Amino acid sequence: MNNKTFFTLHGVIYSVFAVALFALPAQMWPMYGVQINDQYALFLSQHTSIFLGGIAAISLLLRDIESGRVATKLLVALVITNGLGVLITGYAAVMGIFTGLGWSDPLFFLLLVILGLWQVRKQ
Image 1 (tube, rainbow, N blue to C red):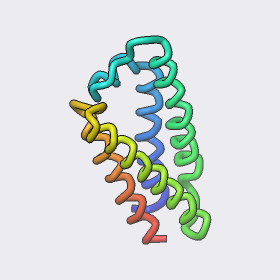
Image 2: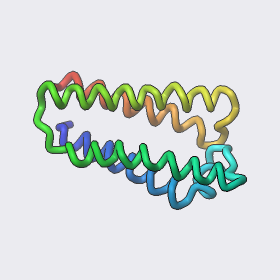
Image 3: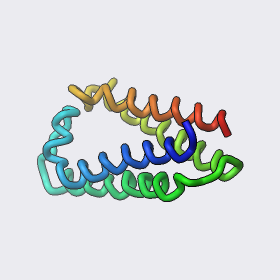
């Protein structure tokens, strides 16, 4: 896929989760086996939306970037970000923090890592 398609897809995915974890945390987290049981957990979910939304904005605003050195560095940064997602959500799934749909998170991040690496190779 070309850079525009990749960055648009990446940005839309992160946007959806940013909005969902900000607006609907009490509905989203239980699907992963995590309960929002106080104002602090609610705030932390909404706080996480800052970073998800920021990654979405970067992806969407730079989706017209030409292939080259800068595009490669941006892609590598997203691969690292999604790799951290694999590790952290994988840990949560293995430790039993994430249940239900929780196992989908590390797989989802892994898919984004694979797509990102594929895109890096095309640069």
